[in-house]
Length: 358
Image (tube, rainbow, N blue to C red; front, top):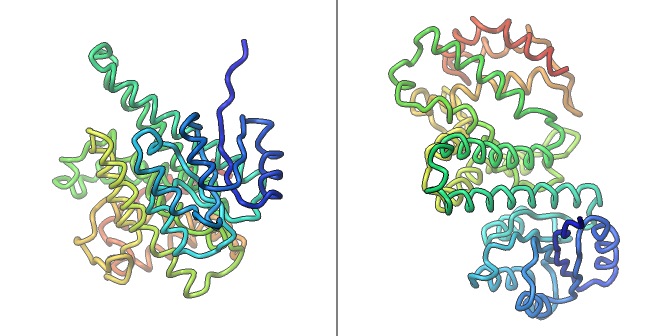
């Protein structure tokens, strides 16, 4: 039995780019190439593709103008659109994402990177459609409701987290590792009774999975910064510092399309607060001490620990003992001193988990 292939529209005014794109994509997808925004809009009257790859810089009607029209019509508003551009500017990328694009790829692009981005985005779309179908048939699935909803949400969370991690390939399995460290630290504060009153209102089954989205905002950071094999310039670091706010904004947009917002609320807290510091010197809002949500204070320790013990192109990995000393020395400065004490009580478990990832 033949399975219908997914359909992509590739729009670019450059014939060479169209030919190269078709060559790369046609092995895996049904591809329609179009050389203008006007022809794309005409084609959409007859066919709704699974995804559109849209050039930004085109004569007569640029990609931004085309996207506005696509998003203004009910029939086409939900089509995922990835921008293709030769520009390498945060402002133009943010503009495209704000208009509704799901990603931004700089030309000339790597065929492998292009295929992987498309694969991940189509998987996200598939999960979204499954969730919609589930909600439409909710009355017939009462007994399975809780289990299925959790599975679907976790699948979307995991897929979105993997998309970010694929772009930021320097960090390796950062999300998976921080999840494990966070579980260890969270179990320890439960055992110690630390911040018991604050945690009492949490839904534990949602808190930890939602932390996977803490770096979601990095999707708006350009590749040349995320994948830079060296120290960032001051300007580049300022761009990186926008990712908590962008992550919060993306999650808020997702909230608008779902009725159960609990896990997204937790995810939003992790995204916006994990780079705040106990002494107020963090970002993006310069919160201090208990102004910082407890989720952010927890993730700050696990996030930094993983960064310290992981190798980067611009640094060697610190040993576990060195990482523990750095975190200890920053108690009361970067980190909540109460949580640092809990961390020290389970530091050996962090060490064992680190060894498992190597």
